[in-house]
Image (spheres, one colour):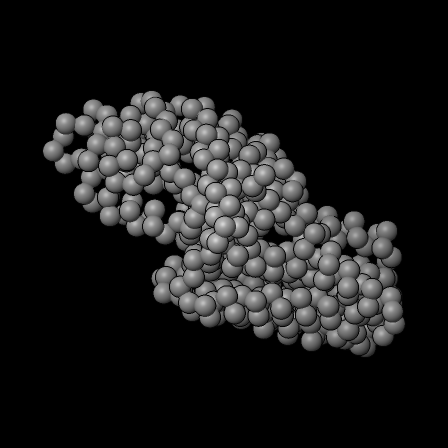
Length: 285
Length: 147
């Protein structure tokens, strides 16, 4: 592992929230424009989080704060592994552990809304996890390694070989980014049957931690998307990844929320149809 | 400057109102007025909210809910009463079953008049509440320094 990768990892820890926050800001502005509104300032997500640090933090149990720190910690670890050029599978596991800590944080309080949110988040994890596992598997079958550094040094044609996996990944990306129609555990929009779900009992500093964790998560997911196009070079890969990322905003604004059953069924079907089929035909392409 | 003024999150509660003011309040979120320009978000969760906006003349049933919501909001917070009924009970003032005004139940910082209150005046009310919030935030910092 050379110095360059340590630089990337350090940049992720320091600049990750900045980039993630800006992505969230662009997302909100884009959403507003799609609804023919002017929308908030680009830096609005930062204002929100800085405000949350000024507010009182009311906690039902201090265990919740511990869980949220664990959520943030493992999210950062997941990102650091990727940006060190390390094992993609290990990074995925760290991300899953982080997700489970978020569920635990929501589960540790007494609010029924929080508990419903937590239960639904578990279902969502069940829905997207198979497809997320298929992504590193696909890379392994094509490149012969789980190492991010090797994947980036692969053939530019790997995105064509893994087209099915890419489609499947884009599908579950909607769930991971908490976008409609899959935002059943917690939502940015105030007109759903369960509004805040997971974050119902989190306030002040605790909520700020969740937001910062999501910023890191967004950067990690963007990095995953980048991996598909990585061998094409930065000049091609980054714009493609960013455009696909913001295509999710369009999906978000043109869909209503689904029921959890439909969500799980749909994402498993996509995982089988696109992901597994792609893996099966890989030896022939 | 406090960041509270840049990102006021709102909780809306209709304490037995006729829904006239509620519709005007929700109209503020529509493309014509778009209060998200100022970072204002309708949260629907008291633990996330900075400003409580109440419409309607409170009665015994909604009093408990209103007090509960107010208690659950973390400091610093502000309350806005919207519409004639929330200010004084409006045409229901003399009715036996209403308290007649939000300030009979919880402390109110800003009063927005009208039946129904216009979206413009509601937005103006929020801007005034921002001043209250900033003042409270400054006081808290000052108190912490003393302590």
